[in-house]
Image 1: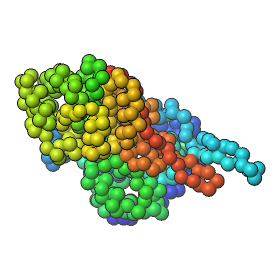
Image 2: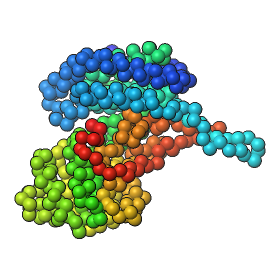
Image 3: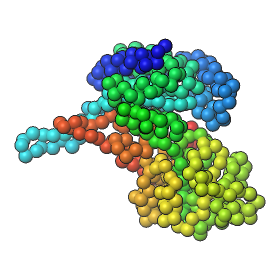
Image 4: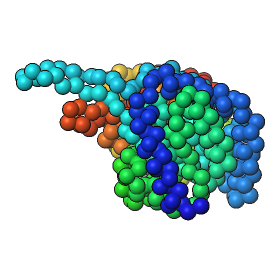
Length: 438
């Protein structure tokens, strides 16, 4: 097929469907979400057969383990998709909510109403679960969406698209409300991101090169994040038992997600005791450690050899069982490191010292800032938002996990802009490694 003509057809269909979805009732949208979940349950064998084709081709093409992990649709992943759909259906409908209604001296009353954005284009790579997450959130917020997954997941995404269409039709909504691009030709991406007549917002979810290209070439507004260089800072007032749980979970629960810790910062006063406890756990898990000179000296005393960290290590999102560790003097040095090397995604402090915890929350400029919690909690599901389109590190419109509220905007009588998210703050004690959603 001609990719440009294909995008034009999808765009026309999406624009037409967006008008229907914008006025759809909460019940109709929820019925569609639950019908999609039922279709996925019924098609589980077919979905895994399609996914097996993608995995086999991925192995043949030399995809690495982290990439294949994101690509896999096992029983757990399918159950998570179904659960995510149910959770989105249970969320309040953001559309039509009126806030800040107040009288003016002229006698009129002015307020802000939350309305759909229109048509959202979402471009992503290996994770087929994003197809369902994105469809669910756009549907709940009354938006039509055009989904362009990576070529590595084309068979999985095509099978999931059939489930979505079936659910929409069953609820009496237009099947074109959610469409999956059926070509892997990259020209289609260029056509999608330069079509403001069809698309109102682009959300890229994938590797740095993909997001940089879209940011550079798009003629449509983009909600994005580039890297997930996440930090955990273990303060001198940390409960070391808790700190061990958090630092172990943040790195080893899964290696591929963007909310996995890539750099561990440790206050000098407790570095010896803490690293002597956490180091052997990482070694047992097969995590390669790269550290500053002080880190390497401490770990050597417990029989662990760490590689000397380079300047590039502090700036690297490994997405692999590799961890950089740095001993710092105090919270100021930790925050300086995060400001210098962080990606404004997710950063956590482990401490029982309330004033320092509050300083960290106020001064670390990231989408999610946490106290005594693993960075793996930076997730729409864990925040009670249901599925998420992605985690935005932008400062305008959406910031943090973008759920159904982030996929809508508020409009005043002057159609004013909206700041849907400021900062997600988590204050929760660490749980076991298996408790964080994969």
